[in-house]
Image (cartoon, rainbow, N blue to C red; front, side, top):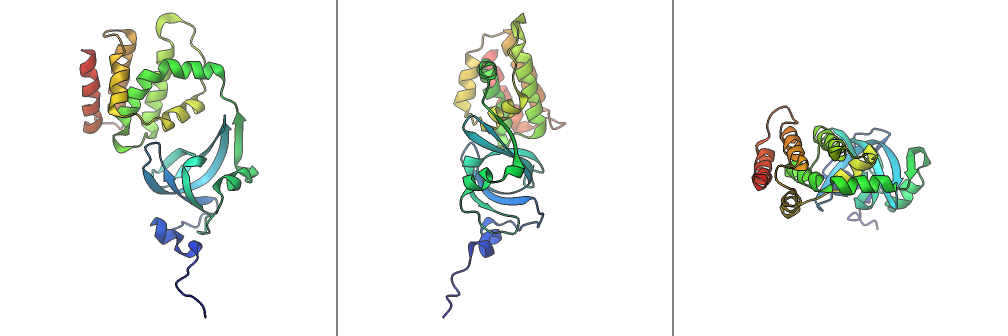
Length: 227
């Protein structure tokens, strides 16, 4: 006698994830935990894989955000193919997809030095941006431009940084208010770094074309520390 209560995961996957596969041949369905541990359900298209250090990243079009996004393979909780068939071993699946692989690089020491120099301002900007737990493309562009400008302060030769790797740094950053406050209070009032943060945080608040009240509120809290 057939047990009708036992339904395959492939059959229930769309309902369990509350998304219906689009049927696109190059799509994947996944349950994903972001840097804050918040879980969302995504369909991603045309994934490309990179490895930096020991971490595997997937760059793909995300239908939830309607934009290109980057995901860490070790944060994918569950994965299904385009038809809803479950993929049991996420790491083995991506390792075996040679057609998706792009770059395979160690992280250069010069890039690490650059990221250490821009870290305080970056944490503050990411905290402002993540009022909705996401850093969108416009916000990402502002933060990357801040990094470039910060590295040129003081007339010293700026260490080179890889913008793709810098995107990973921003995507992985999950600062809370205490982190942002600490970063700002360590800046000298009236310093070039503080003035630069004031400039780029204003750009960030208006990055969507008009001022975002939630982001503006977070910015005011940080700027008050520099008055």
